[in-house]
Image 1 (cartoon, helix red, strand yellow):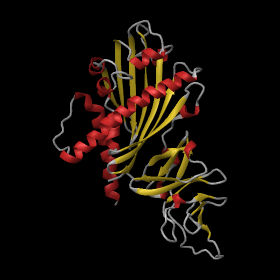
Image 2 (cartoon, one colour; image 1 turned 30 degrees about the vertical axis):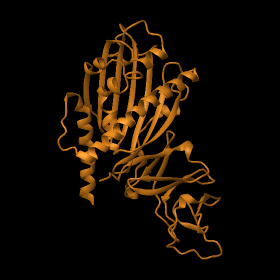
Image 3 (tube, one colour; image 1 turned 120 degrees about the vertical axis):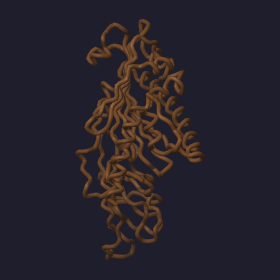
Image 4 (cartoon, one colour; image 1 turned 135 degrees about the horizontal axis):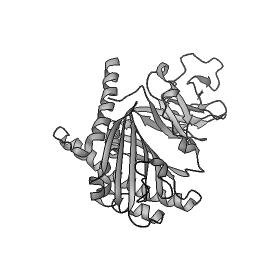
Length: 345
């Protein structure tokens, strides 16, 4: 079952321009478009005349024009033009979804529109700060349940095995990390400290360390599918792990990850990767993006293979280990929202 009364990322704002974009969210077909006044609309992708996908049409001065017979819908879902017909029936309309454009994201509410509160949208100001946090935006279509993707993001011990040549490094460093799992007002946060370790390849290629480093990873989960990451490393001896204000002069990155369910076994993965070490060097941001993109493709390959195996053999006999504490709390938060959804049906 999908969690519906929540905000999902439907697209990057930069990608919703002068052409309609078809997207399936929580198994509902939706068309996104930006009207000539710059506002973004999200409608059920079905013309009320003959059921043709509105995403096959074009954006006009007054809305989105169906590519089959030319009826035009505005951002509210109301038909505002029928070729050759002056009177427009009140029934000539389609469902519209609440939409908010914020922090370079297009946020969409899939559930009861009366419950859509923009103040509950996750804040991510780093996407608006290209000076201190220059960044690039990514998107992957993942052939797996969105919960498996979030599992992966909250399971940091896999880095040393799946990403040895990029952001991971030595597996023992991750297995022996000092870890805390903390409840937050909305979800759960994992804090992992790896003192006096060797920097992973991506870090070492980006900045010049003297030798061993103190490394941190902080991942905050906000249900149903958002993970906010701050990771980095500095030379040892600066007491940076216990005092975040001392985390200067080394390597740092921020990532916003979000998984939006498409179907029960597929999802949309949006991510923003920010460079916090050589902010005035565009090549540093590009190299970071490419390295992280490679790592995320490695994750995609593993998660999609995992989905296929679980579809075949089920997950009833899976076991948890000590490093799963953050993932377990994350799943509890999702399951609580699913229970609330079931209770309201």
